[in-house]
Image (cartoon, rainbow, N blue to C red; front, top):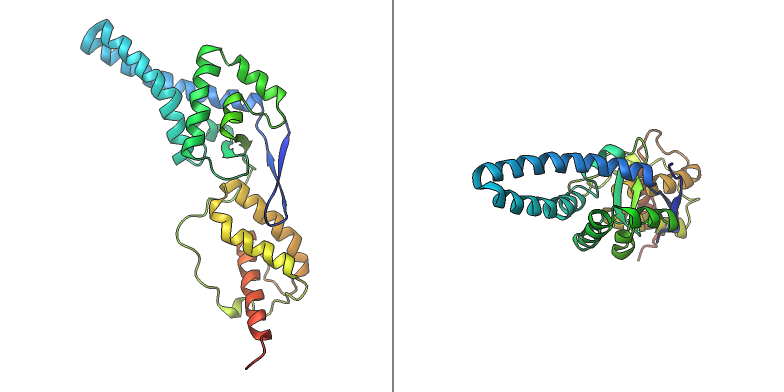
Length: 250
């Protein structure tokens, strides 16, 4: 059974950002893939330890590999991989903070330390009960860490990396009529552009799409085919140029 629940977050831009929540089915699929990967790696390590040092070495290796998989593997991939282990990436899932920001080291450590109790000790029963019982489909580790597991929208644009985009030449937006864009909308656009680097890529793309969809009908002369985020950059530049031109000369 899969869930279509969504977590709605009110952003500083005044937009309601809807994050589709992962249900038990996709979370189980991601966990199975990760467990197969971890199990294969653990088997190789334990066999090598047994061959090198006998039963005692194999027992030590087994305990070490278990901790590495349940904590190290998940934490490294979640923090360095944008909230996605190999299994989560295959299942189209991502771990984010409950405000939509990327998951941090502390939060990832907390949720995965509790996974040792929820999963290894109690056979994932508390985790499944918690996902079913909570409003945001959170297991106990998510509740303690303040994280969500969300489904990535299909066809999401690639992550934005690298330095900030260069200044946009005025001729690219010279024909834009942005007089219908008020101060509130301008503030929302600028707020998004300033804090977009703090957002999870999926939330960033979704918020840009919602802002662009709301504002495109209000802008006459805008070039068709601009990506949502590029449209917002051009719009902010056009409004800034308009304000400079409106200033009285001294």
